[in-house]
Amino acid sequence: MAPGGFSEYPKGNLGLYNSNLEKDACGVGFIANFKSDQSHQLVSDALVMLDRMEHRGGCGCEENTGDGAGIMVGMPIKFFHRIAKEAFDVQLPKLGNWAVGNVFLSRDPAVRATWKKKVEQVIAARGIKLIGWRLVPTENKTIGRSALRTEPFVEQVFVENTKGWSPKKFDLELFVVMQGVRKLAVASDAEDQIYICSLSSQTMVYKGQLTSAQVPEYYLDLQQKDFLSHFALVHSRF
Figure: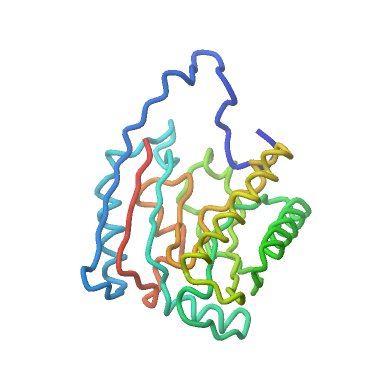
């Protein structure tokens, strides 16, 4: 693991640990509105469902260090329209012509600046307009020491489709951006310095090395009343 990296997971076998014996037994849940009506109640219900799956998630020797948990939601349109206006004084276009990505970055300012620049270069190379970066508000008081040691610096990148692409084509280009950044990270042995959780015009992912109950406590966005969605997929890792 690189200093300040996202993981203390061993690379290869170590002591009694054998990667060939890895098994998954995660908990997942899904909730949706059949009419695609967005609401904060649906997000709240999904987070309650996630909390109820605490028994399906792994934890370390510290009860407050989880194996990982998160939530995927439909793009919270009203929330991000407000954020874009407050943060960038920008009025976002209609859905499908803008996107937001959740990005894990190094807590080292110099390393973080380097990788943000590289992300911007990959975005520009695909002909996508960068709107700006937003620091994601988080609260880490409840997470354990092991999780704190690998806690990333979480930012959101806002981009705009100025090429007239369809939403499907735009999301394809965003996927290429994600893979391009990942390729750079792998080539630089820097996967513990940059990781794009999601980058889409239709969905958002909030996740981390958290217990099920810690997800809404850590990500303050999820507590906002104008954070609305028409579906949610929750996951508790084991």
